[in-house]
Length: 253
Picture 1 (cartoon, rainbow, N blue to C red):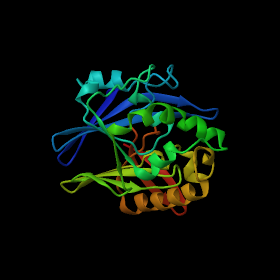
Picture 2: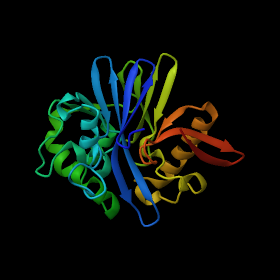
Picture 3: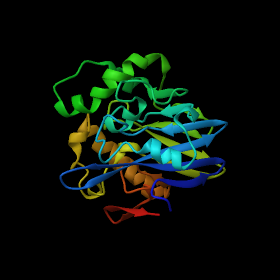
Picture 4: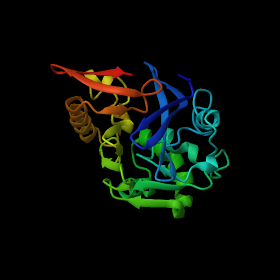
């Protein structure tokens, strides 16, 4: 397995997990993975990482990783944002605020976009997390498609509401030819959250709602055995959520 790109198929969808680097926390490191999907003649990314504007020493490697797979930014025609936090949208623009993905349309929930456009509040953490989206994405509004949280992007690619981490946070469900991959985004960031769902609540806009959402989705994933893509787990972030008695765990591929 390459340390920059991991290829897989979900039915008719050709997918690549790209390594964008990692984020350093005082307790652990968080992976940064972006998924690319070829479907219905479209070339799609879910999120675009940190770019040149956030944690440049350890992150922002998406374009280099794409290059190893023969992909250029101009190849991408659709980017789905599961939410607007700094480590998911900063690859949209360079250090001067110019668009990186020149041919892409951007899809985000209207609920998330409304929060991005709202004035900064009292939560300093969230103000930092949304600073770049507010500064650089709002001027690009004409390139955005605002949708409901259960929007079908293409047949077999559907957004699913997962509110709490942010106001309009979603997952993306891929289904093709009887195969499925659930892209859970920031529903869970760390294995620590399996034992203590509230341990990283500072990352959440609405912590109480996020914890309920997390518990519900973990239970669903464990019960169904669905193949999962977790963007903040160790590259490539693919595996299964298991449950033994009352304890959830991560089983990487």
